[in-house]
Image (cartoon, rainbow, N blue to C red; front, side, top):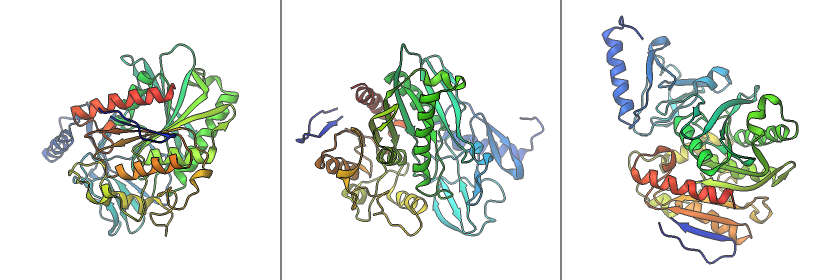
Length: 414
């Protein structure tokens, strides 16, 4: 990995279960096992017969989720969203999949929005329970943030001496899919907490289109205010995590749409929320957009298994932005008319992937922020695409992930 600096005072670039099952059921199970295995997932999972002929998972979920726009149930939170590693795969399981009229928006293999308002999120990433990871010296637990909104967070607390930095993380998924319980995020954040030496709070926010923006931003800000109350009047029930935190060194972070959330939460709450002090933001492949296409959006060739295509990005924005807004809305395009100089943002680390369609837009964001006096450091990761750090689909991705964790650790502890 190459390292060099860009000529600017404010920006630094580093390139760098039963025997009585029918044969039909067994055939379906075998088919599902093969499809799941095709994505390279080799962990343990169980496929069980669900209601109406569908399938659900035990421990690691391989199941459909169908919700209604007007429904905000605890059951939806329990079933969680899922994403396919391969956008071309579309598993339609259960006989009721098409009873809601035509599909009006879709990302094949990920999400279908029907005319009557139903939203169907499709497999494949398994959800996992919070765990103790003795090999990493990390304990994780889930904590409810807001019962009314069904928001919660997963905490990762490393074995440490004294108080350590506190990092608030927002998962990706185009604002429309994803969960703090996805196995890929669980593994990445447990490792990050261990290697970087910080307590991590992974926020599970409300998803679009049931809850369009600014719902995710509101949930992010509410999570920060909840942390503030714990820092001021921490309950004994929560002592297991807050007693380890140095609240004078708080970092907001996220990847893709989660990075967008981290940026917008930072601009809302500012740097000083006594006793919290937000020292920085870490934006991993931030999901920004605009009506005018960048060079990488127009010409970057993407493999069929790409985690983000331009078509998918456009659908995400149509489902998540306020109805009637276009991609030049400031929540999508922070450079399209926003007074950047007036933004209250701490020093920022932006992690960019060379093979990501967002590459050029991410770089333009860094340059624009630096020009108005904001402190921005960015790192370009060679040869990898969007979400490489959680998909981990090659040796190169694993190598780049180790490098990213090292850069994040250095940024947190500077």
